[in-house]
Image (cartoon, rainbow, N blue to C red):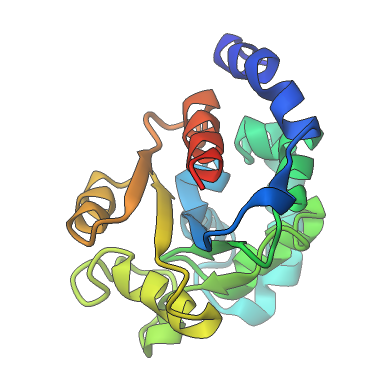
Length: 209
């Protein structure tokens, strides 16, 4: 574990195991970017290097090759490899907190990685450009208003009372657009995916209800 992760782990370990989520009343959404946030890499770029296109029918062979070549600890951000944190996310009352992936990436690739990690029970939805009638795997910042239109799709799916939103994202542009929409935000800094600081932001967001 890196020093930053150890620092957050010791502070929040008990919070994860003692979370009293059933006391929550307000409803909210935690929207987490995928590439360079849940992962330490941009998955579409790695897929393109191996199969020369983004044909999702080939992903079932390509993605295991990426994992085998680089190793999970070099692909997935440290918090998502820690059981205390992932169990904490699972304990959040899903009637009150929805956890979603919002990404410009490729839905099938994201789903395969999440299933490979055994994290599929954490996420209530995976939203990518295809859900807006766009092409997966490309930067759709302008037409999707950052990640705002993706989040609005989730609010429509779960109910407009889910108006408390936290966006965790490595893009400053997406963060700024979310702030214009009055969403809470947590910027992922550097190229190592989520860190203890982002976990801190998630815990504070949940505890604020």
